[in-house]
Structure formats: C-alpha cells, structure tokens
Image 1: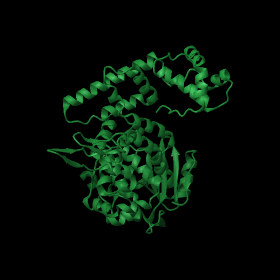
Image 2: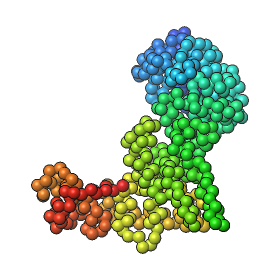
Image 3: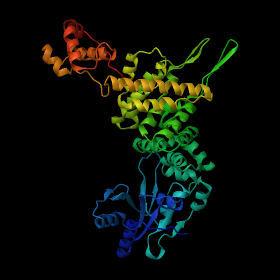
Length: 477
C-alpha cells in the first residue's frame, strides 16, 4: 500500500535525507489523513538517527529555525504553513507516579509500537525508492475502514505509557467520529485516576480540542462514561443525574443537566466555531447542582445559579490554566444567559433593555446564540414560541444600542473631567459620581450625551459629594 506524497516541502526534505544518507518516514496523523483523503500541514517525521541534527539541516534548507525540546529529543520546524516535528525512532515509558517519560533509542517498529492507536501507528517512507510505501504493523488500515480506535498493544500498556492517551481517545472519537474498541474503553475506566499524573496544560489542551470538534458531546460523553470527567472537570461531571421527589399525588423530576448541557453545546457548535462561546455554553448551568432546591407544589428550582456559575469561572480558569483574557467574556455569558428570557414581556422597559445591552457589550450576539441553543424542549410549539420571543428581545436590544449610542458604553463625563470640576483627586467619590451618571443614562433620565451628563452632574454635585464618601455601589455585570 502506498500513499501519494506530492507535497513540495516533503519532497525537498526527502531529497535532503537522500543526500545525507538518513532514513526518514512520515508517521501518525499525516498517514492516517492521507489514507482518508485529507490534507494535513502538521506533520510528524520520524528519523532513524539523530533527529535534532537533521531538523537543524531542514531548518537551514528552508531558512527557518528549529525549536528544540531537548528533554523529549524532538524539534519543531515551521515552514510556510507547515509545522514539521522531528523525532528519533524511540521507545517511551512512564514510571508509576512520574509525569515525565523515560525515552530510549529504538527502531521504527519500536516507534510505531509506542503510538496511541493503530490508525496513528502507520508510517510512510520518504526514501526515493520506496516513497509513500506504508508500514502498517498493527492493522491500522483495517481499523480505518472499520472506523475503530484500537491500541497497538494491550490498552493497559499503551495507556500506562502515557495516560493522556485516554483523553486523546475521547478527542479522536469526536474528531474522526470513530468508535472506541471495547477493550480500550474498559482500560480507560480502570485507569481513569491515572490521568492525575499528567500536567494540567496537556489535559486542558486535549479538553479544548474536544470542545472544538463538530459534535463535542461525543468526546464529553466518553469522558463522563469512563470516569475521566470526574478527574479533569469535576464541576461538569456533577451535572449528571436526575432527582425524583413525590409531593402528594404528583411526582417531580428535573432533567439531567449534563445531558441537557451536551445538547446545548452541540447546538452552539452547529452555529459557531467560537471556542470560548462553546466553553461558556458548557458552563452556563454549571452551578445548578449547588442551587438545586425543591419547593412543595412547585417543583425544582435553581435560583441564582447563573450568578454563582459566573463567580466560579475565575477559580476554574486558574485551575485549568485557561487564558485569562477570555475570563470576562465567559463570565458575562454565564451571568446573563437567562436575562433575555426575563425580558420577553411587551411591557418591559427600555431601561432593562439598555442594561442588558451594556452588560453584554460585544458579547450580545453570542448571548442570543447561546439562549437560542438553550431551547431543547421536544414540544415544537413551545420551542417556536421561545425562539420568537428571543427574536423580539434581540430586535429591541439592537434598536436601543443604535438609538442611544450604547456600544462600548461608559459615562460621557469621564473621571478626569469630574476631578477637574470638583477639585477631588482619584477617590471613591469620583467613582460614585461617574456611576450615578451612567445609571441615569441607563434609566432613561438623561440621554447618552456629554452636555446633558455634565449638567446632570452639576445639578447633583453637592448631594453626590456627601453620598460618595460612604458609597458602596455595585458595578454593572
């Protein structure tokens, strides 16, 4: 079996290897994707010999620079839109309790044996006489046809060598939409707690890759069913389960919040590739288990879950080492995800619409995407009514944003001008006055206009100076 290797960059690397007398092969995802008819520019190349020295020669050939990872004896060379990773043929294993692998030299067969799944354990030659010839020692091509994820060795051995492979199984199942072999699944169940030896950065990287797939629920469900989710994201794991309560002659139950959340995430994924919108969607009901209460004659309630869920996000972001520049965006969507439904009444005030628009800011359209995705009722008439209500609220928000010039809203009279007028320095009093101006605009008392805001400030200056000295006011959002 051969694959066509017509990538000009790979052909130049093959020619360099021939000049140097070095044996090299493309391995893993490149071969798998080539057999599936997919193009790939993230390419792993196995070198029989000194991979770092060869990577340096490739970098020189393309006037690039090799990034060396000495501990793992690998090198990354960026070339145009390609990311080329070079590694020597090797054996790799983890000692119990260790986070770092022990790496020793090996053969091409050793290198393929240590890989995660048979579909990723194939190599294709970059030697002129055998260019594209596939080495498949573990029936990887057959597993591609079966759409099956299976480990080259006993799954306990493969997963023990690198427990992150358990998460990679969930990720590849979602990305490729393959089944996981039953023995591999069982090994994941038995070894789920071993994921704790893996660094948080690697775990989070795999988790976000699952969230970025076409249908994230596939991978997330596997993490839950194998017990991995309890270790890597316990807040989401705790969403699972249904409680039943008998109240008189009536039985009350609430739907499984985990399964509901998976559906909502998939709904958002159909509409947007925005990873952080997907993450916020995963988080939107995260505090429901904490706020769950049963009210006799009424049923289950989750009052305040949106605010508590928003407050949890900083701790979650820091523990999972997520980029903090996305924190405010996620907090905003979690905090506001129920607000639009509360504004569907025809009698709702412009003030309430203004506050929603200002609090959501640039995330306003994403908020409505989340809200619509959250409609998972099986009753088509009810779903249609909810969606129509969201259309009405969104049109009101757009109208108010444009009419009142509220995009990137803040007081037209800035803190510096307030200090100039009052003679105060930076202080709580100045902040209070700025806040009171903003509140007046949001309440429709004055227009969003500098002269009107300045006049309003001067009219209330004496009172606000006194009030501001002891003010403890809550900022929007």
